[in-house]
Image (cartoon, rainbow, N blue to C red):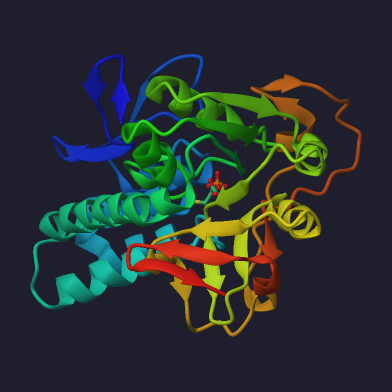
Length: 317
Ligand code: MRU
């Protein structure tokens, strides 16, 4: 991704450490977080220094490089960071299998990162076909370069359409409670793509008025029957899209598909801490005594999904 004229990835490996763009600080400041140890990488994943399933998978791959002296211990710690994103488990298996076959851990992790970027590029090429000139698109959470190392999943088709000079307007859900919509807005701003951030509960309003042509989101895990776990709030957007006859696409690499799970009900939904709801950027927005529930993801049944955009093409339901 291009930030003020310089190309960056969301994370990379350099001088025996993982360097992350610190997503907790964006869009206010552009800072980096450095992890020299597995524990620091574990912290980065848990605390959302890095977020988004494909990027978390790459972080775990590099975490395995840092933890090569005790790879079982490292794998165990990394697996416990976030339960829903399947890429995390996929990449740890990729690393342990590769190392068991005598491959060098850093070479493996770099290859894994490059492969994810290429998959996203291909998702962008396939998905671009869905964006007509003058289209209006709704997206939820952040499924851009920050969430996938580069390009993005849901945002990759938009980047390509923009490159092809198609006119577009993107509605960006703010995505309570961690406000990942800010990150999407920041990425679109860097790209010069027209957008507006909307409150999470505003999407139905715009859909009903006919102002949204297509919805594209990312995914954190996709079960065998096509049910999708994605950021909390995705399900209601999918239901609203169906009600308003708006196509709803999910963009994700094949590494997000978990064929061991038959349906969405089997996907573990991460429950995150209450402070995320009661605070914004460490400032209280509600009194601390209020009882809170904070599921990080929800399940969108396959029947609401028009198609899946993967590196292999667009698969219609
Ligand atoms: O909890 P997060 O911020 O790691 O959530 C991940 C997401 O950004 C998404 O749900 C996203 O849409 C899928 S990953 C590209």
